[in-house]
Amino acid sequence: MTTFSPSPASLPLTSPDPIPARLAALKTTPTPELKRQWRELFESEPPTFNRRYLESRLAYRIQELAYGGLKPETVRRLEALGEQLDGGNVVTRRIRADLRPIAGTRLIREWQGTEQVVTVLPEGFEWQGRPYQSLSAIARAITGTRWNGWVFFGLKNHRRAG
Image (tube, rainbow, N blue to C red):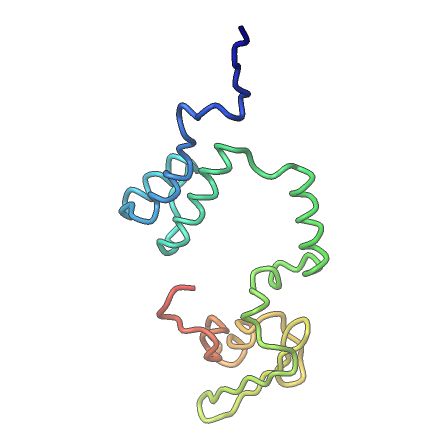
């Protein structure tokens, strides 16, 4: 008589993977609980970003801890690609390319009765014939006080997140 021995692949799972259920639960988890999980998983205080950011970062971290993170060679490759794209310029790296006005765009703002015109360059900005790395530096030069340049030129609403 022959006995049947099933292959491991055909055996039913005795305990299903709990990670997908844990990820799905993030959508309905109260924000204070998300922040508690953040403290537990990241061993730091949660950032003041919006709920969606907390959910996405927690989901990534849960999977990273359960299944492993990126391989070191993948991290090195991504860093090298980032350097190629932004040349190591931290200012450029912080500005999402899809939010930055295209080169040649003229930003116009009236300040104390005088029209201020800024031209967007491929690698920065130009105001009164001088190059600047940031809009905030130009806003400071115009007003004499610290301003978020994106808010000053109307590119970002300072009252909303993101």
